[in-house]
Amino acid sequence: MEVVEQRPRLVSLRVTQFRGDNSAPAPAPQKLSLELRQDIEVGLGTSASADGPLLALVNVVLHAAAKTPEGADTGAVFEGRYEGKFEYPAGVTEEMIGSRFATEPYQYVLVAQVVPLAMTHFRRELQAMGLDARELPLGI
Image (cartoon, rainbow, N blue to C red; front, side):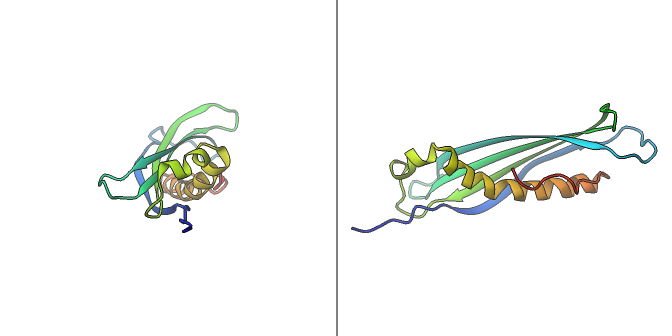
């Protein structure tokens, strides 16, 4: 009996959107805090071509808002959208991995590969817009 390798491989990470607004008048230099929220979706899909591989997709949306030390909103808001695409080896079908794909530990392994890459880009964009984002976590 032939054993089919069923581990997906991360083939791309796309930044599908980044938007930020830091247009409020610059106050005197002060320490700001960033309130971060992550929305993560995981899904199973097929390639556009009929003979293409099975795909796993991880969509990550990162939202951040800058706050003053007292917790007041500064008006600076940021959002980044990212898409990680995994390809399964040829021959892997949804029936082979469907039950495992539905479990949280399996999905976590996929998400844990995409989120650090997305967070690295997000932090760089925040720094380019004048915010010190070095203390933001890289992980989930």
